[in-house]
Image (cartoon, rainbow, N blue to C red; front, side):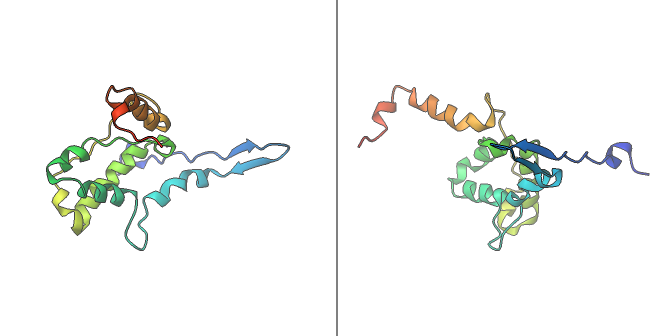
Length: 144
């Protein structure tokens, strides 16, 4: 007999109606809203997806910094504000490391995502703002 927790199904997302400029309205079905991010996790013909791009980017870094980078991921942008997006990304990364032969050296690696002090859609702006406020900033940019 299945436990009550595993038997519970997630509630489907509701259809949303957005007023458009003028008199029209846009209706987005709940299924479309739910499946919109799936394209990021499906591998294409070149076997690329968001998780493979993350792993490939870390593999291009120096060997001694890879484990540190993998455990200190920072997600930014509006897409990463989707509910449970970071959990899905982490589980996909761990699954790829376990399954794909090209990522076998990562089997002992632990992935982690930082909680940011601001909303995900302005993390990049915050980083740029902090960088621009450094004393060394005037010596690190090129003017026209």
